[in-house]
Image (cartoon, rainbow, N blue to C red):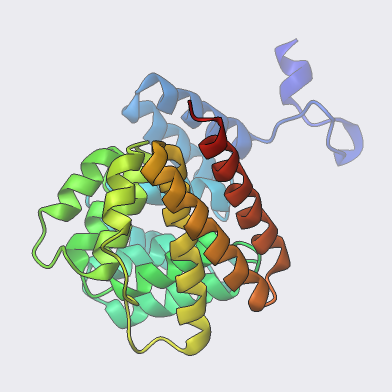
Length: 272
């Protein structure tokens, strides 16, 4: 049975049940990750890359682990071996992070910009996060906290302890990590302080994208926080962001935000 599911079929055609070695090793690494076996994770990722040196999923997984343990220089060496066409959006982000941490902010920003250009225009959340990454590219301590192996809640605390933590970009990252940690009331409170553009030199299109996405993030946090005051805030923010998105031609985004406004209104109406 084992041979049936691991060997290639005749005439060099892929059997529907055949899993190539590089994919088997990545799957084994993922299982080891769930078990908390870091040694096995590293072993299988290296074996995956031995079997397929250009396997981007394994490169990304290995780069994330290296960044989490502070080996940014190793990530630069690892990803510099890939050609431009082989670098996915995720790999460009990881290489940008490695460059930022090792003191090359200009090169890091180029990677973030290239990643954003290659990200679909409808992926507003990802595109805005890449803009925020560019703002903190000259803050190795901030980027190192964002890629650390700590939980989102702990990452938010790490960011708060840094010098200059009150800048709009750092506070935005803190609020995002709080939302990822399901600490919505804390995120809602923090978003209320983030009311300026993180980089005054951004072109108008970037400032507009940031403004709408900030309202989107804040309305989501307020809605999940619950409570009459927070729900009322979520309703106002969602309506405002929906109107802004529609005014700039992002109709799909506008409808998503309008639905959140309707949900917030229903939640307010249903309150005892």
